[in-house]
Length: 406
Image (cartoon, rainbow, N blue to C red; front, side, top):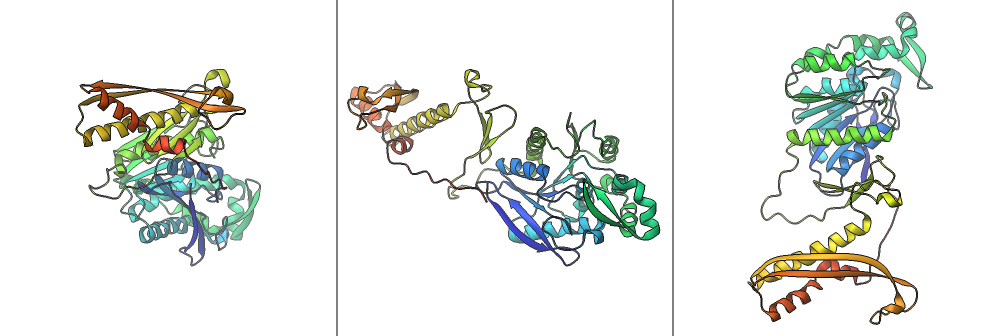
């Protein structure tokens, strides 16, 4: 999936580094993602959730808060209020260059930040929080043994996730001034609260307080067995799945294109789900399906195999092409049924094939035609089957260009 990387000015005048994860086709909606305290936009949860949503047609902007990742500025000068202001500016940037975000997503302290910023982003129709604290000052629990020293000395260097960070008295004072639950009560936007019952960093009681303070429509999803950072890929993928399915109701993301609008060539995005050895999620615009391998070869048989998909493409294209021809010629065609199979055969067994050594692929296609058609009409329809675009692609020279994603 393409990623646009750029910078935009933050509330402190510093340049903030951002990444916009785009779907393979025109985005159905735009989302703004706020990462956890000290994490950065490129932490595993942020990247995986953004990629998962992009695979479902939702573009996701994530950025580094002041002094984190590739963003300018000093982390010590950042506050919860400055993070909220930076989220609003990020939404402003999206509004100018693409479209304002209709979905806000926040992880941990980022979840509290999107709740606080939501009222200043009028286009946002839905907010999803993941492991969010109900009070921004909760983050002080990560360095509780240093709080008194911070208040006395003005600033102290603390170790968080094995890295040194300077925390100032201003950060503590600012976090304590926010009455987040009062803001949640006035939210008036759809809210999804996601939290792990065993979260050791932000207790699930925080999710209860957020959920009870919010007005409907609101939903709660338990992230069973997940840790606070969603470090297991399956947990991040699950969160992306749930957010995308839930948000669809509120984002108007699947409205059909206007009549006469030009056709858009949509990318096919294939991504591992992490649920089994071979399972893949295939996304094409708003459409999704699973691919897998049979149990006999190590798969879970949860979806079509690669060659099943290939034969499906040829069969569907064959039937559609015959239907178009029948309608154009006003033929009384009732139904087309195409049955296909694939096998490897010895080249020497194929008299009409140019290849004479080794193995080659053979596809058998049997077409049943229902309708009050004479012999000539049926014969012509069989001829037309070979003119379907997928058939022509499979029987012509194909060049596949592979490159690493940026």
